[in-house]
Amino acid sequence: MSVLHDVFKFIEEKRSMAPLPLGVKKELLSLVNLAPLLYVDLKAPYNCRVLAFDASSTGVGVVHHTFPQLVVDQLAESRARHTAYTTLDHCALDTDSPLPSSIFTSHWKTVVSKPWVHQDHINILEGHACLLSWKWLSRTPGVLNSRQLFLSDSQVLVGALAKGWS
Image 1 (cartoon, rainbow, N blue to C red):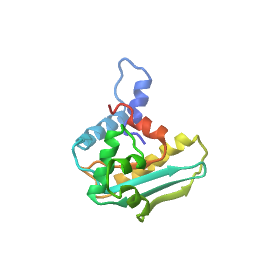
Image 2: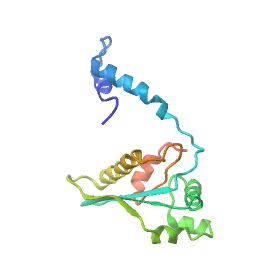
Image 3: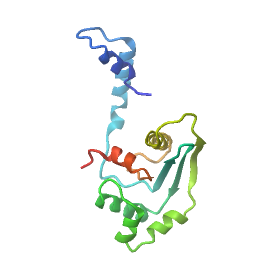
């Protein structure tokens, strides 16, 4: 899964001086090739497609919906005012717009809906749901040069992902 799997394995062996194995060389070359994609514009507009994900002990779900830019911007602005996460109640208090009702009454499209093949702690499963969202998004056209809004009901996961944003 990691671009630097062999590199990390090589580092863990704690060699002071050793020639680089072929696998390490290939991974470092891959990283150089990926470097142009590592640029992030924190002032880029938000993508109008909002993703929501959730996990339970039995399965995972990921959905998306495209909202008007104004709605996405209002939700993002509310999130910015209330630290890394916000609730839809905060959005209702912050704006006069029908933001919460439009989120709940819109027709969301299912990306993933499937049972788990393994059991794990719910916070780990929420993390897997988030990863599924990112994987789907990375294969979706039109998401470059934009920021992405995700909805999650897991305060633990949101807090873990937001750590260090201050």
